Length: 277
Length: 307
Image 1 (cartoon, rainbow over the protein chains, first blue to last red):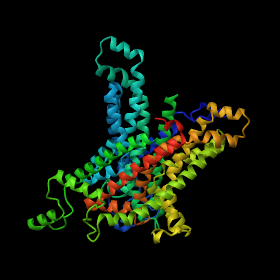
Image 2: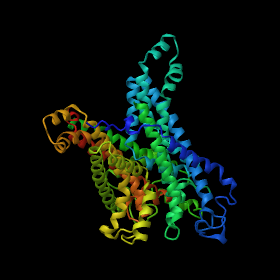
Image 3: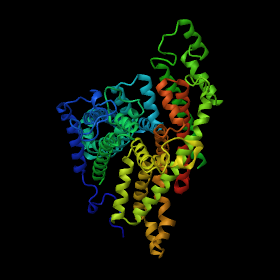
């Protein structure tokens, strides 16, 4: 009964690595990188003669906003900023999380317990408010946005890496390396971490959409990325303020945001489920 | 169970203290203060203001005084809303936020558990795939996109519901914010319920129940559902934190006079006492909710009750 009940059963086709979702994100990222320099307008060029141009207006494929800035350029640049912040913050989370989890898992005993207690404690905190506090305190620079987000998104990574390290610690090849006289640092970096990389990559893929969400959240409230720079969160906010006149100003950046989050989540979940088997 | 609760409380209080001290120190380290306006104040006025608000004392002393006042429910005066104390602002905003958050939590549990159950019973069929696909989509929809989108469709487009506002909590004003806030959590709960039930249906005690000839609905209701909901219960803690943060956005989008809006205003205006008060309250609420989740956990899984 219920042969197909488990979520990662190969027969249902789930659990395949998410090639299509990753390709979609790659296409969006490529467009965001390559296209803006080719456009006749920059994302911040104000054009009073073309305020609130409709979709497919001549010269403005996606129209313009309330001060005549080209929405195609703005959406692409906003996507670029959002993805760059997300990637940087996810890398910060990867570095802190991997280091923390590897040290806790390798040392074991009291050190492990103390380190994981701290992680448990931090899990109970209202993160978004910590990030907002950081933004208020250190000013709203873009570098701090991603360091701040990365610094609070590393917890899951630490737990996952710790579990992997504990499982790998008892494997024969580690014992062999120990017997051969390798130092703990060498065993960790040369023998254990390479084996953690796959799972870490899956959680990196899952962290990126989380960070995209946090960054857009902050920018939406005016606490994240600041003008003249733009991001998908700012565009959604601007679109929402003007949606009764120009619904597409909300729908297009919102759609790109949702597409990126959905694709990265699906790709990450599939990779994770595949590695778990 | 009591021992477990006691232990949790023992860690909850230091956690809360840490949050207060940390946010206090962070706020004081911030460059710029609440009295930095367009025009620089002269030395004397500034010193008088600092003395009046206790900003001239050593940091450690300020923290101890602050914690002492919090314990008595006094969060100090708001620096921006000059006529109100922070406690008064919280007293105004909290009922609004709790109404929205509580209703959204109930709705997401009902939708999520219902949807997950419905999908798990139809495991492997197209209905299952459809519900799980929808759940994945829902968890990826940020409230700051769905909120304005709902306003666009149901308020501006169809004219069924009001665009924004509170109107003393009239039901028609509650529908859109509550639904927008609940949807991502409904998706996550549906996924957890579906996975939990798929696992529980393969357990020995469920096979035994089937062998006794119980109807499938009985098997699920009496034997499989309770263990299947354990992961849902452990998600409730993070969900509460998520609902509170989501409420910040929802209150901004729908112009609701809740805590979240005061928090954002306070953060933008460097209103230290207001931001500190709200963060402390949020941390307390999240810790309280984690305790409740532990209780539910113990009720669902008797093994948790044993020491």
